[in-house]
Image (tube, rainbow, N blue to C red; front, side, top):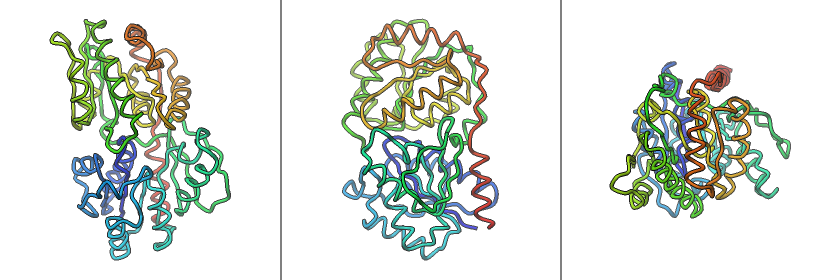
Length: 360
């Protein structure tokens, strides 16, 4: 049986990572898997040795804030490939218009929409936007909604998509990581990159990195590693480094085993994937509230949920606060390096749901 994956490759890599995790598991079960992503998402497919549906990258004119333009040349060629090769299932993440267009020309019962809870319900968006997203995302025959301690949220209109709600689907590499909490490393994660992101997202990313560098001077007993996965971001941050700073900045994809192993504490945005990984790995963390765009509402929800899991080992800090405040909070969470946290990823539940669909 043949399974396709179409994953939006910006602004971060969360949608690609979770989709690839499912494809890798399905490949181990004996399915043929193929995928398409773009911008920084393409590198993840190559790292996982997943065969490409299409190897051409879209021009910036054909990438919208909600993914691929469904009437672009690239999208048209992918649709043609799907019709020709007849995959048994198509998993699509972060591409509402791609999903609704595909459902017009291919059996919607063979399409699964992978969703972040905020894709279906984000109160910070106007009602028209929420209806738009729900109408297009739920045009697939099936939907898997996964997030931090996910709970069923309001669906504004009747739909015929069968929805499965699970905890966040984690990438394979996370499951086998053994963290060495005797290290002296403070790790900063700035996300999957800033390609095709908003001006506010870029500015908050640079400010996050700057705050981490400043706080590292206060926490001189520790080393600081900052992961950008973006050369432009890394270049912008290097201007804030002084000769004596004990800070290492990474500008490209780094295996999570390398990134998390040895982390005494992690500083990051409160995105769905990273916060779920930190809960699973039981690493003390500082969640920065970026407040730059519609993602802030989602991040606030994630913060509230993770604090229920680990109120002592996780703190939240606003970007407007001082480097001293950030450093003080880092020292506070480090004291709780072995929290009794039990976060169960949604991988098995999602795979069971997919297998049931494939064998109907």
